[in-house]
Image 1: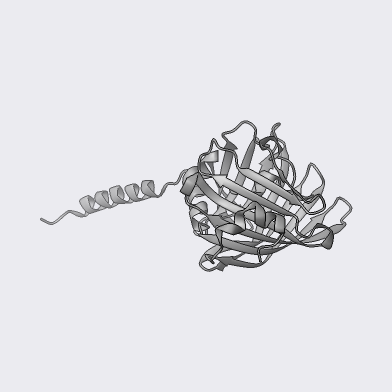
Image 2: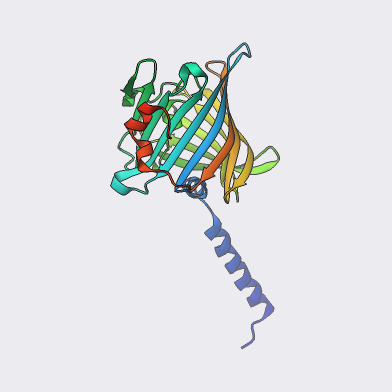
Length: 265
């Protein structure tokens, strides 16, 4: 039986409306896509870190970061080791983080300071302290579970000539430093290119911008991160000099023994 043109048009509109509805994304959907886009088994980052004070004076750091995903094995989501290689006075300083799949369980954090020759556990109440003079807190430095926050899509906004999704994320735990974070996400690449951090009084505390986004091993990766801390009149710039994904990293890297040694090899 042949369909009349009006019937074809009606069916076309119905089909199109279902298609549009199916493509609607929630804030959580978008942040999940960001997480999935960057989902790798392991990662090694060789970075240069520059600290900038309110007089424009700079201090440089060279930092190695190692990450390994455990996909929930033993309740562990991800392990991260961060080691400073330069300058000499802080060489060997390191931070070890274990994050868990259970959003109710706090991350484990251990800091090693060579000058003191001891490992210090970073208690939960200290997670909001700033790490080694940077504008990143201990909590910022680790992995964050998608469901640690409630995510709301605020709409779309053009940023640097590209239309982005704008997402508000509010922590479920009341002891978080931020009342909320607002993120700008590039569709298709599913990369966060800007984050605003608000304090408990909803004042803008700091802003992170991510630039020089390039594909590495099929993963869209920001190579320059700039954190502007308005409360401290201080900035931290991180430049990724080299990044490797899905390489072999032994579980022994993510131990207090390696942390205290101050190097992986």
